[in-house]
Image (tube, rainbow, N blue to C red; front, side, top):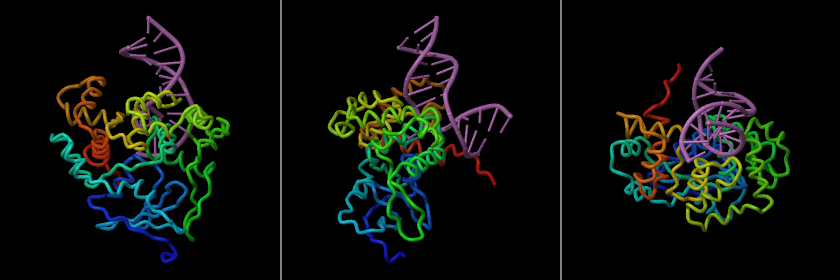
Length: 292
DNA sequence: TACCAGGAGAGCG
DNA sequence: CGCTCTCATGGT
């Protein structure tokens, strides 16, 4: 089975594939047999970390693997990013605590839809909802023998034709009309996701928050994870807690003050810094007690 | 069981 | 404006 797969390798340094895929920026990758199974575009893929490269396997020939390099951002020099981070104890602890953590570059529609579904949900539940949505409405993909079936993320056009009850059946609750409304604006052409690539970040953000179910936090997630605007700094409950505990342990700043602090303190790649704080907070600094 | 989750939108005053 | 409440569902 192994030999039947088509394979390529991306040389990397300081790339922690596991932390990256499990850091709450994407929701479809599953750890299996020392590697990771997932979908990029219309391709089932298996990714595996080795010391100096990421090994990529596909069930069918891939003439051009560059879409995988784009997704992984494997060519990015992480040290250059780190050098722009503020030189303070919390930030340095977060970087040391999450070596090789990266930002992926996801397809904007999948990223937008996924984060509309993320509001007030735990990551495990977001994953369940998205898995259901893909299984029911996504295009079936070719997978290797003995592997579980896989589906592409459903297109906006496909979701736009559904009824709200079809989406609620995927356990997304009050998020169903949001996702449906946004899918319809993209499907009917009144919102152009592609055009955001060429806008200044503040303008792209203004556009995104006109979509139903998209407020400041989700807009920033899409700008950061889907478009690569690395100044975007999503502020959620975890980041608020991180800023309070790590930077202001002796008092209780208002949310507005923390937003102001976040927008000025972390430099041109603030969004990247945010991912370190988020993952550090969730996995190390304030990890919930382990049950036995 | 009760609480809370990578929030947003509507309805107040 | 700024604040509060609600929204649906399931994990812990």
